Structure formats: C-alpha cells, structure tokens
Amino acid sequence: QAKQLGRNRYQLFDMEAAANVQHHHQELERMRRALQHGELRLFYQPKVNMRTGEVIGVEALIRWQHPEQGILAPAEFLPLVEQSSLIVDIGEWVLHEALAQLAEWSQQGHELSVSVNIATRHFQHIDFVARLQAILAEYPGVAPGRLELEILESVALEDVEAMRAVIAACQAMGVRFALDDFGTGYSSLNYLKQLPAETLKVDRSFVRDMLDDQEDLAIIEGVIGLASVFGKEVIAEGVETPEHGVMLMRIGCDHAQGYAIARPMPADSMHDWLKGFEPDPRWLLGRGGQGE
Ligand code: C2E
Ligand code: MG
Ligand code: MG
Ligand code: MG
Image 1: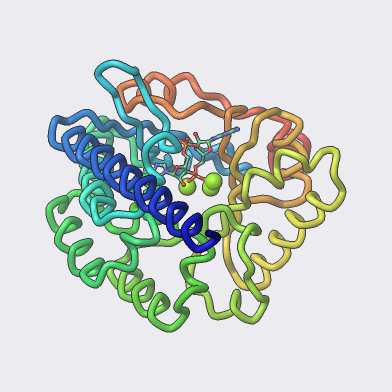
Image 2: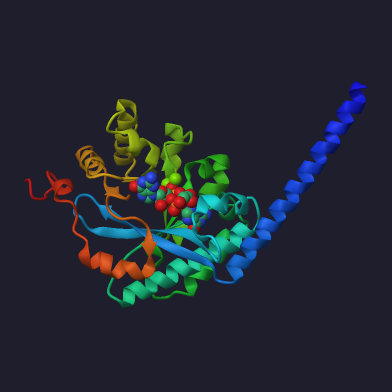
C-alpha cells in the first residue's frame, strides 16, 4: 500500500515538474522574442565621487519594456534567464548597448564610464574574453578603461584560479572590475589579497541599516579599511538619504550611488540630469570641500 502511494506521489511530482519545465521553456521563449523585438532597455544610474562631487560614471541596469505590463525590473525576468544560455545573448546585447551609449555621450561631450553587470553564467562562458574583445573592437571611440564589469564576489570564489585568469585577461585589455554586493559572499581575507578587482561595491543591505546598526556600520568601515590596504576603491550602493551620504563621507568611502543622488533613468534623461546636478555640499566637508 505504502509503495503504491509512494509511486502515485512520484507520478504527481513528475507531472508538476514537467509542467514547470514547460512553463520555464515558454517564459524563455518570450524573453528571446523580447530581445529580438527590441523590447529590452538599459537605464543608467549615476555614480559620484564623494570627495570631488564629480560624476564618475553610470551603472547600466536592464529593464524589459513589456508590451502589456509596462517596464519590468530585472528581478521579474532575469533569474530564469540566468539559468539558461540566453543570458549570454542578453549579456552581449547589454555590452553593445552600453558601449554604443558611451560613444554617443562622448560625442555630446560627456566623458563617462559605464558599469555593466555580468551574470555568473555569462562570465564563465568559455569564449567570454574573446567575445568581449570582439565587442570592444566594434567601438573604437570608447577606451576599454571606461568599461567596468560588475561581477559577484561569489563568482571569483567558485573557481578562483580560472576566474582570476579570465579577470586578468580582461584587465590586460584595459577593462576594470568591481565586486558587486560585496560583503554578502564569503571572502576570506587571504582571498581578497589575490583578487584582482579594482573596486569593491558594498552591498546596499549594509548601507540601508548603517545609521541604526553598529555592526553594519562596522562592516562598511572594515571594507573601507581593507580596500585602502589592498589599494582598491570602495563604492556604496543604495545610498538613499543625505544622512547616508554624510556618514559614508565621514568614514572615508570613495564613491556613492543611490536614490539620494539619482534613480536609474533612460539614456535620454542623462544629459539634462548631468547639467542640473549639484553634489550635496555636506559630502565634501572635510575633504578639501567647503569645510576646510
Ligand atoms: P545590482 O547590480 O546590485 O544593482 C543595484 C540595484 O539597486 C538596482 O536594482 C538599482 O536600481 C537598485 N538601487 C539603486 N539605488 C538604490 C537605492 O538607493 N535604494 C534601493 N532600495 N535600491 C537602489 P535593479 O535595477 O532592479 O537591478 C537588480 C539587480 O539585477 C542588479 O543588482 C543586478 O544584479 C541585476 N541586473 C540589472 N541589470 C543587469 C544586467 O544588465 N545584466 C545582469 N546580468 N544583471 C543585471
Ligand atoms: Mg551592479
Ligand atoms: Mg549591487
Ligand atoms: Mg544587489
């Protein structure tokens, strides 16, 4: 009896699993069509140097301009895509789009750099370096040093030797690296020493609570301390209020990004935003700004 029951359960499970697989398959087909039909967009969020108030660059953030549902955030469609090889096609589209946009801003007199998020599966693709090189070659007006790749701290952890080689090959072309969501992975200090990324990007969960939570503040201070020892830059993401900015400035954070500065915006809004932007003078206090 029990055996019979067990078998039925498995059958039920198999049917559910099969239905899920089919659902995923359809969703992926939808995404593939979205890519082909030009429904994907990049929004851009500025990053600011807290010492000088200068806009140092932008992070490209993908959106899906869905024909019925409006603009969808990556959380609504990327997790599934990241499990499939479609993430490589979408990732390459993002690189093309971001570099073309940089070239256009250059012509308008804005010398920005762009950070592009690279999914783990894309970064681990066997041809990653060669394809990146080919893409960069299509934009001779854009120096590779103006492209930064944001990878997760955990990527470099999975296969340290192989990933280091890929990072080093990209850096040899001039491309820079940031470790995104830094602090949420499990970097050992020894591993940090080997890590070739130029920038550590403090995860926004620490920034969110840093004003009330001594431990989160201590983690950010720790990252800043480590970064300075290892010669890396630190950017804080999720800087939502001026008070966050002031605290980050006090503890010596180099760069900031978040709603307190600007929300992610379409490329056409960037020109006007750049013209109107004035850094919060409180950030510059004590850093060669007004206060000194
Ligand atoms: P992320 O790279 O850590 O990006 C930061 C996220 O925080 C973005 O969400 C951004 O809109 C949001 N954000 C920025 N400032 C603030 C703030 O002050 N407060 C709060 N609460 N949030 C803020 P978004 O655009 O929804 O992207 C989510 C994630 O999706 C990204 O996290 C990144 O991991 C992934 N992603 C986005 N675009 C791409 C892409 O083109 N390719 C890949 N592979 N992943 C992407
Ligand atoms: Mg990012
Ligand atoms: Mg992040
Ligand atoms: Mg994040």
